[in-house]
Each structure stands twice: as structure tokens, then as C-alpha cells.
Image 1: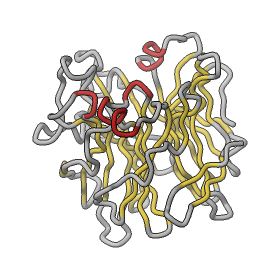
Image 2 (image 1 turned 90 degrees about the vertical axis):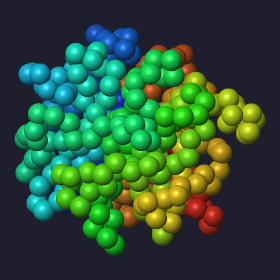
Image 3 (image 1 turned 120 degrees about the vertical axis):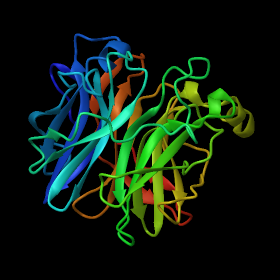
Length: 321
């Protein structure tokens, strides 16, 4: 388990360097007990492990810019990919001038995963109004364009980004989608239509795309309060907070639900921002941050790996420890 004495931890992502697993995570001082204060006083921490259970804390990776940059208020969730000998950290930023309401995506690079240099002073990607909702307080509390997850298609060489966003039309409580962008080189990006259909959730956070046994699994997390009325009526299932997934035969989609039941979820929201990662034995594991305890208190730690099995029909099953 990864926990810090003086800081809360929540969303996280991985990078593999030989036999070591690097983990990058959002963090904030433990004096900030209110969630809103944590989110507005955030930096990206860094640790490394041989077994994903015992972690060595490394210097922080990145924090909000000190000049008038696109990320001078927050540096939020992202992902890391290696290309041509260089590590790329794509992450979410917001500005003080806009009070953090508008989210954009940019990147930094590193040769060693330790020293990061921002690329440019402007964002790389933002919500395209052709498909996606712009800031509209009558519909939602922010302009969602965050949590980029990077994936390179081994067949085509094309880079894909999967992004938390909302479509511009439809009932406000069901506009949450996973947006899609593509690039030949990680520098020039084309915003595409979403790879998921709206209607089920208000938002679909911290996506992750994982190829397993010929299927592409697209994970996301959301809260019980962000299940749409249409979904509640359709399923009759009590809403939960946690991590769900869709599947496709291609990284381009279309993605579909194998089940209405979440991969990991409960009414309290004990685990959030779940990710899949392979162990040294090649088996799949699930990790998440410890969100709330049974009394509703924020925990702010990252779990140990939990074994995952794949059913014949493709459903994922997590064995909680």
C-alpha cells in the first residue's frame, strides 16, 4: 500500500521502466481536509516499486506553473508514454484567471522519469465544440476536458488519447463520455468524436485503455450522484461510486458494456480511480485509491494490487483482499 505521512493521495497512473513500476499521483497536504481545497492545492508525486506493494518515494514530478501558463492553477491527472527514447507526461491543467473552471491538456517530457520539462506555454488539446460541451453552468459545474490516457496502437503506430469530457447535447445528467483524439507523433493532435455513447453518466473520469486477450477494455470511474436518471430507470440498480468498464474489438471503438454492474463499486465509494496493471507473472491486477472509509472519512491512500480474472464472456472479476 502507498500512503504518505503528510499528504493525501488520489488519482494515479503508471510507467514501467525495466522491472520497476513507477507510479505518479495527485497529492495535497493533509491539513487540507476539504475536498475542494485539496483539488486547488495539488501537485504530482512520484514513487517506484519492484512489487507494487512496497514503494520508494521519489522527488515530485510536476506542480502548477509559476508564470502565466495554461496550468498555473492546477496540474491534474494524466498518463505517461515512452516514444523514441523519451518519456511523455500528458496531464490536465487549469488557470487562475478562469478559476479552474476550464480544463485543458498539455505535456512535459523527461529522459529519466525524474526530471520533467514542460513543452511550450500553451495547451496541446482542448474541448472541440463540434462535439463537446464548453463551459455552461446551467448544464455542469466545469468544462470537462481532463484525465488523458495515452495508448499507441501496435498495428498502426497511431497514438490515441482517451479523455474525460461531455457532449454538447442531451440531458445534462447523461452527457458524460470518453472523448478521443489521435496523433501520428504525440505533437499534432486531431480531436475526434467520442468513443462512447452518452446517456448513462454525468461524467466518466480517469479513463484507461487496456488490451487483454483480443479485447480492448476501457475503464472509467464515476460517483453514485452522477448516474443519469435514464440509467437509473433502465437498470433499476442502486447507483454506486467506483470503477466500471466497456469493451471493443478496436481502440477506435465502438465500445459497449458487457454488464451494468461496476467492476468495483459501492454506495460509500471506498475505492476510486481504478486501474489495471500486469504483475511480474503476467497476471492482471486491479489497483485503486482508498477514497472513503465506512464512516465517510476520506482515506487518501493507494491500494495494494488485487488479482483480476477474465471470464469466458470477457467480464472482469476482481478479488478484493
